[in-house]
Length: 225
Image 1 (tube, rainbow, N blue to C red):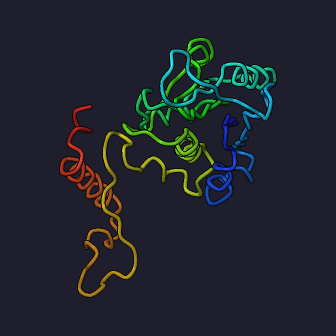
Image 2: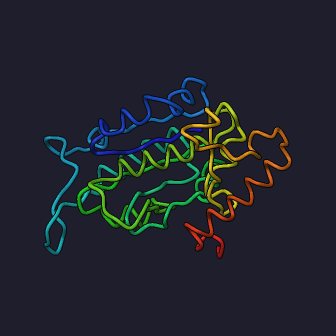
């Protein structure tokens, strides 16, 4: 999979993809993430990419011309399955959406900034608008990192144990069950006997029961979806 990300401040995205799982995914050739500097596509002086909003009001808006230049230039090289705009008024990102996007080959993410992007870009180029929550960030870079991480780890071969992602929270609308590791007894706090029994059938049943219980206690809304 290839994920291209258009950003006004590309340096913000260097660290999230230079470590851990996503770094290994890149080294294995399973996930290629490219960070595109929007300022490379402007024709305005001093690499300007934003301007005042028509009609007045506080805040700046990312201009249409640099964005269209960047999108069309990238589309000449790659056919994108989705052109995604990260915005607070997009559809809320969830595990189901991550699963769907992980099956795509090429994604283009556009990071909003300031008061957002010129509406004409949204009208003519964006195929999907996504929010990571009901709050406002300084820009879409952190949201893009969240999407790339959530999607990338689902690609076959990225995780050492490919079944791990299938047991994550929100798969099957359930939260993950409690997990334990060594030692079995710490200060008298013991690991449930079933988990050290060696009976994998009973362990799986226990985990499923605990996942349901955990979900009912903390996120009962998921049981109704």
